[in-house]
Image (cartoon, rainbow, N blue to C red; front, side, top):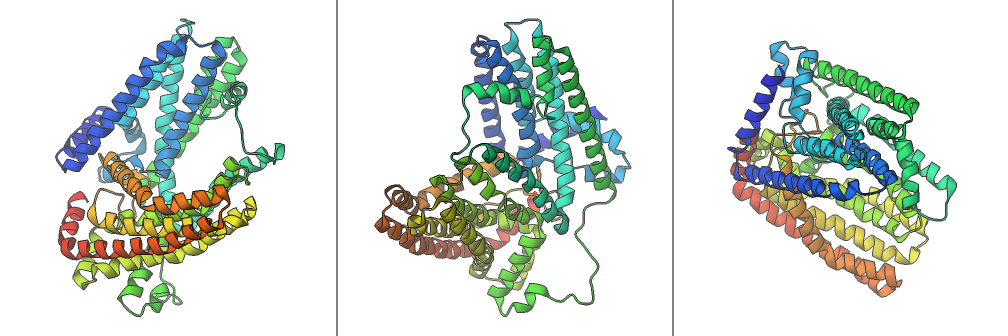
Length: 522
C-alpha cells in the first residue's frame, strides 16, 4: 500500500505542472529555495563539527526540537499541510486507517519540505564527526525525529482540522491554546518584571537540557545523553520519544477513522426560535453582503482562524517586550493587519458558490465594500482594545495619536490592497467544510509568493504613516503624531476607496473568468 500511495503522490505532483504556469513557478521556486537551504546547511557542517562539545550538543537538541515543533505548528498557522492524499478520498474503498497510515506517512515526505527535512536531519548527524562512534547514534536519533515530525504534522492537521469544523469547539480550543502562553508570561515575569526576556550563550545549554525532556526534543536528547555516557537519562528520554510517537499515532489513527467514517459537518437541526439572524437587519445589497461576510467570519473555520489568534497576540507582545517597551505599541497595527489581510483570498474561499453573486447581479463595488465593512465592524473594537491596552501598559499616552494613526492606516491600507488582490489572483485553497489546515498540492509556494508580494506592496503603501508614527514615538513629537493620524485616516481612507473601486471593476469585468478559474482548481 505504501508503494501505491507514493506513486499516486508523485503522479499528483506531476499533474500540478500541467495545471497553470503559476503553480509551476511556485513549485520551481520552492525547489530552488529547498536546494539552497540544503546546500548552505550541508556546507556549514565542517565548521559545526569543529565547535566544542557543549555547542554541538545544544545545537543538536534545540535545532532538532524546533524542527519537530515547526512541522506540528507551522501548517496550522500558515498555509496548511499538503493534503494531496486527503483521507476522505479513500473512504469509498473501505480501507482502514491502519492500512493507510504507513503509506500516508512515507508519502508525506515526498515533496520539497519532506526531502529537505530528511536530508538536513540525517546530514547534520555528521556534526558529530569529532566523536565518530556517535555518528550512527545521531543518525538513528534523526530518523526518530523525522518520524516524530511526520506523525505530529498529520495528527495535528487531521484532528485540529476536524475540531475547528465545529464553531463551538474552536473557541474552546482557542482558550486551551491561550493557557500555555499565559503560563509562560507568568513564569518569565515572576522572576523579573523590569525587563523583557533576555538570552545569552551561557543559558543555551541549560535550555537544551530541559528541552531534551520535552516530547519534541527527546529523540535528539537521547544522542546527547549517550555521548555523555548518561545511560539512565538516555533510557528515560528514549521512553519519552516512544510514548510520544505512540500517543500521536493513536491520535492520528482516531482522527483518520473519524474523518473517513463521519466527514466533518457544521450542520445542526433548525430550532423553532431560529430566524434570519444577522440577515434580518439587511435592508439592501450592501447590508446583505456585509451580513453574509459576518456569517463567514463566525461560521467558517478558515476565517475564524484569524480571529482565534487575536486573544493570544497581547500575551506574545507582552512576553517579548516586557510590557513596557515601545514595541508593545505595534500590537494594534499587527492585529489590524492580520484581520484585514484575511480577505485577500475571500473570492477563492467562496469557491463555486461565487456563481450566486454572478447570477444575482451583485455589483463588484458592493461586493468589495460589503466584505470590507464586515472586517471593519469586527476589527475596530478589537484594535481599539489593543491600542488602549498597549498605551496603558507602556504609559506612553503621548504616543496615542501616532499609535491610532498607524493602526487606522494599516487597517485601511490592508483592506484596500486585499480588495484588489483577491479579485486579481485565484489559487487553490481549502474548500468550505474541508480541513482549514490543508493545502492543495503545489499551491503553497505560489500562495506564499503572492502573499509576500502583497506584503511588500502593503509596506510600500503604508510607509508614510508608519515612518511618521515611528518618528512621533521616537522623538515624542506631538506634531509627528498628528501627522501620522491624519495620514492614517485620510491616506488610508483613499487606499480603501481605491481598492473597493478597482477591485469592484475587476469583478464586474472578469467575474465569469474568475468563476471559471475557481471551477478549474476545485
